[in-house]
Amino acid sequence: MGILNFIQYCLKHTSKEDKRYSILQDAERETNRCIDIIKDLLTFSRMEKEGPEARQKETCTVIFDRVFRLLSYRIEKEGILVTRHSTEEIPSIWMKVNNIQQVFLNLIINALDALRDSNRKEIHVDIQREGEFVQVIVADTGCGISPENVQRIFDPFFTTKPVGEGTGLGLSVCRSIIKEHGGEITCESRSGIGTKFRILLPIDRRKERIPWSTVLDKRREE
Image 1 (cartoon, rainbow, N blue to C red):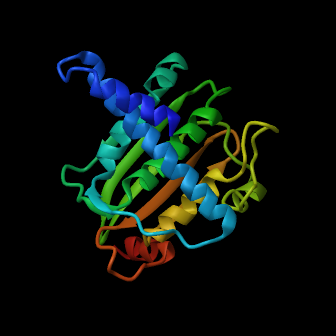
Image 2 (cartoon, helix red, strand yellow):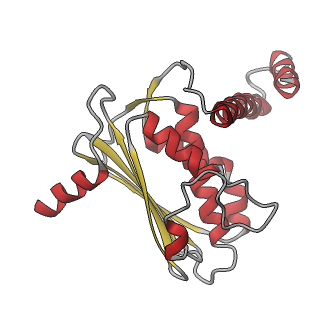
């Protein structure tokens, strides 16, 4: 709250024509996002249901724009090749924007961490409509995850990172957020080759959630 108050003070005393004004707006938005993340973590730690929060319509492409802007310095510094593909008409989704941004940010940061010692440093994001869902795929060419660990990555407090570098809550919180939106998240990985996360988010939240396996079976039939 102290950081937020200082930022809002600076916004009040900065002209909108000043190039620093938009940067302060970004800082204000991201500080509010951090506040929401802390609330989510507290909710998770207490095992309580998430409280009401305003939803709004947004596209996944816009959220990824923000994520890559936030991580642009690290991506450039570490020489990561990022490719993105999306169909022209990606529908907007009623969502809790900060929560979904938290999911995408976590997945990209995990991918960057996995690429740290890789010779081939690539991240690919694919967004497309899949029936009544928007499908998001985040793939990397990093170190990958062993078969026995893939089954546990969504478990609370499980992490493959060294001691002090991960809490093990990131992917567990991501799964909780996606499921709260009526969606599904799955992971495929091969050690030394890379990791791929698939997310399905319903376009209309009022529709009953459909298991990911059902969607895959339907795609095979087509």
